[in-house]
Amino acid sequence: MIRIKTLINPSRRSFWLLQLGGWLGYFALNLTAALGEGKAWTHGKSSLSVTACGLLITSLLRLGYKRIWHLQGARLLAGAAGMLLVAAIVQATAYVNILNRFCDDCDDVRSIFGYLWYFASMFYLLLSWSGLYFGIKFSRQLQQQKEAALKAQAMAHEAQLKMLRYQLNPHFLFNTLNAISTLVLDSRGATANGMVASLSAFLRYSLDSDPVQRVSLAQEIDATNLYLGIEQLRFGERLRVHMAITPEARSALVPSLLLQPLIENAIKYAVSKREEGGTIEIDAKRDGGSLLITLRDDGPGCKDFFIDRRAGHGVGLSNTRERLLVLYGERQQFAIGNREPHGVEVSIRLPFDAVPLEKTSKSEIAA
Image (cartoon, rainbow, N blue to C red; front, side, top):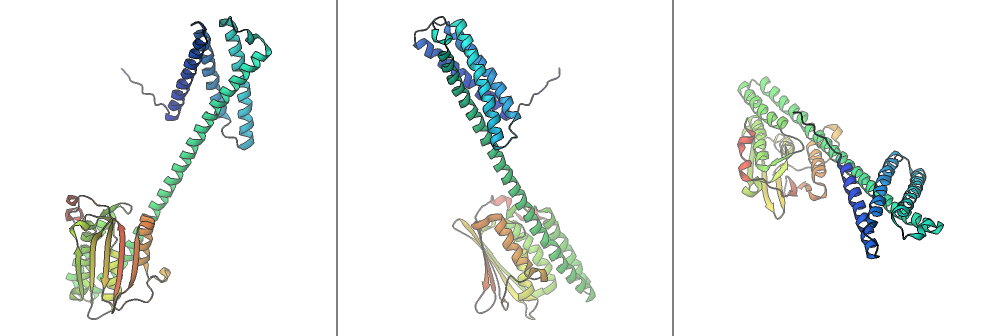
């Protein structure tokens, strides 16, 4: 046996639920009012007939409204008013004919004033129905437009995040390949080979991670250690790194590859340009409802942190600041300044969202 599954449009289903429920309520109200006036139970026939006519006429009225829905302003109003007037005339005429057939004691129905009274009551009833119909339809249209706008905004943010994240890859890759080339020219083949292996592991993590999704700080630290392993091969003991990450902070969610461009910037200006090298400190802790990440170096400092990116400078800092702004808006803080007596400090404050500690193991970034 073949089963045929019919998919009903949710808006159509809602309409018929309201339509049938409303007219059944009208029938019950009409019947109880007639019985309250002392009329016989046979009046239920007339109430049921009027209700059936109203159900049919408003269903046809809905089809007419749907055909003129694309019109704007006065044209839509004029079209709806014309349909409403015709529907009220038809409904009032049907009402009078039904009462003439089933109601023997309704003498006023046969007079012109009686007809006008029933026309006015039917016009008011259908006007209320039309107002409810257009109100719901306009409300749903506004909701759909709002959802479409939010979806477009989310897609724009996602595209911007991906652009910012992927912008780091060629920038970092160029610097690393340049360092490998230098090692090969200096006949340091073993060191260059180790750097290629570390680069492969780091790029695997970089390319596999979703630029939009956040990772635990523990994963970010593991990825940072992969990157630092590459730089340790270049600088040896000249590069010194100290980390102080609290257990609670390790479970916090952060954007992937958040620290790498900041560390790369510190190495470029605080380590590589000095014969004695330099020290980089990374601290992370929970501060109330926030995650506080601090990165320091003991280099000479800087006069202008956000200079012209077109000249190839300030890419990491500007990129990180823009990513955090897109992701968190005003809920984040990114501050950078010189230390005393020398060095640079970068401070990042993010909303604290955590994942279970068992999901933050290093095995998730296995090479």
